[in-house]
Image 1 (spheres, helix red, strand yellow):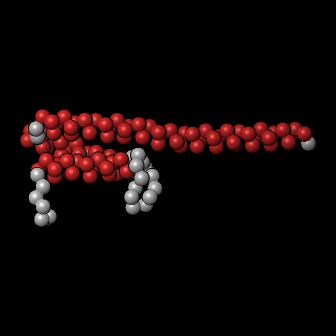
Image 2 (cartoon, one colour):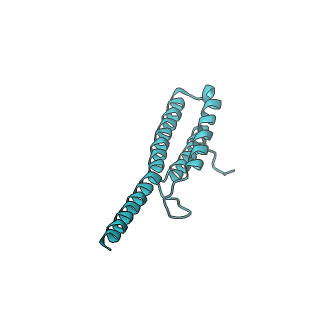
Image 3 (cartoon, one colour):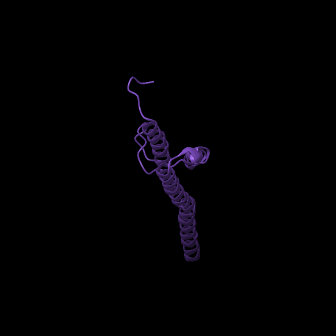
Length: 118
């Protein structure tokens, strides 16, 4: 508890902002202040988005129209970014595998050339 009273709107905005900040960190969009690194943790991002979604659905009836609009916009933006990062992360192993396959192919081609020269 603080000595300065905050309005419910300020507390609501702060709660949403803290959760959104955590999602941006988990999506690797901003630097983690604890590690000073940017990394992706899709599980953590998903959990935090799900929590925000649950809060929105549970509180929706008591929110003002502006709060509903804000909450819906924030959730939409987070979900779109989540999907974007998820696709990028899914593509990474394929890129690494393609590079490895290409390198293996180059190696076997080189081995075939060397053997044929013998």
